[in-house]
Length: 292
Image (tube, rainbow, N blue to C red; front, side, top):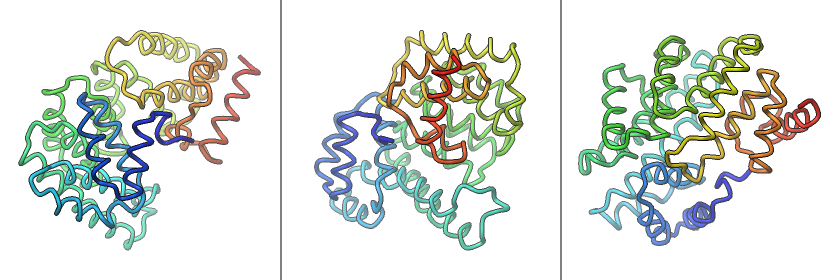
């Protein structure tokens, strides 16, 4: 699976950071202006192995710029979750938990510095929405972080997706709060994310009915006709719709989604299925084309 979603700029950015070429990375990031696009490319930065080993050199070389601090903070949140692992809190060892919180504190300190120096940096605020779950901040603080994004960019995809996660029952909300947030959001695909969370929490049977299948088809139509900005990582949304149609046993709709996707599989959401994301994508695509 291609973490760059086939985007050439993302591939160049990933390569530059892997080579520790801060000049090229800075030039590429400086040319990106739309908040959703910035979120996508900073997400590419977050997935580069070993970045924490040298990012302080970039920060020291450009003390007047918040960009390297932002990159360190965004990467640091993913770096923290890598230390924790994907299990529940009860399944996480004390050693992993301590390292998780140590890394997350480093990340949030960087992000706090960015918003202190540049309060209008939506990507720093959006990443603080993401980190809110790990740092276990209260509802008021999580909503404050979210507001600092959406007052500047009301349809910020990453911030909405992270806030929906915060409001899930498995974190600090409930099914009702999650669904209310998804319905009220300006991004129709959040309803797809809410259905995925329902499947994870309650099992496949929660979606296996004609009413849900019809609802999912209506949501998909709204997503396909969405006239807002689509960042280079939008293919993740298409993958999410393919998965949820498969889970809901609507293989005809899933097959149409797989036609739209082609070979552009993404790790999320397929990693929720046992056996590996790439393997599950190919398996369900084969089933959808056969049954649909």
